Image 1: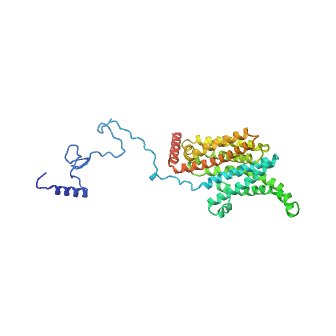
Image 2: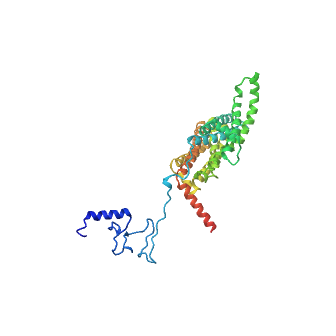
Image 3: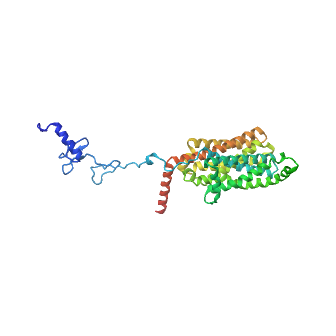
Length: 382
């Protein structure tokens, strides 16, 4: 450095070159000074390593035949960590709606069984429970819709391709039939003479017809909610479309059987015990398929709160069926078994609900299965 060129002057010249974007200043860290060995032609300084981040480094000075190090495949990350799908805005009341709808359907089937086999206690318990459950379902549904008028507006059209539209019509057909059947159970309390005496004589046959009509509609009521969930874009619901109606049908039968085991004497609880066995078989089979068949999309049903709920549901279902079969002569054991089946149905419905919500919140459950399907399609085409 020349003594007549002070350091301050050199620094100002270097700063001006940086501001103007002109090469040729003193070499900084990681740079090769102009004119030094290894500098690029033209005398300008360049970074010592111009390899872009993430690009493979080639051994052997970049010559042909050099070994290229592979970079590990990047893991999936979403845009700013945000979910790809908008998670369902449904709250716990929709999960409760799933349970009460199934309970109403199972109770109507139980009442029909008691009706055709001459078991009045079983018939009465099923009809009354069905009315209470379907009323609770309407309350939960209207609460989610926000205004009662919206339920009425959905009856303006019938759209077979929409599970929500079909479900609205199913509820509209089932509700009055279940209500009339339950009201008919109060005919014995009416006076024998006068206008109410006429109602006393007419209600039982009308109630029998309404009870059979409600039982005929009950399978659709029990399963349409499974179709409704599977019709959404929520990954773990959509992929489980073959199993969800089966799970919900079994859960409905088991919950209806639970009502019969609690309310009816052991001598009349035979149909309830048979319903418990059939419902538990369907529910356990469907839940097992949901937790094992879907690959990555089964994971939300096995972990966290959904996993705990579904495991509790399986255990309670098995205990309820065992108690119903082994304790058929004990009213207390039958009541405990019925309670276990009801709680198991609640746990199963909430577990399925929260499992789907969890799959919508994590982007990997949307992207990874899509990539797998695309890979299989390309392999089939190739």
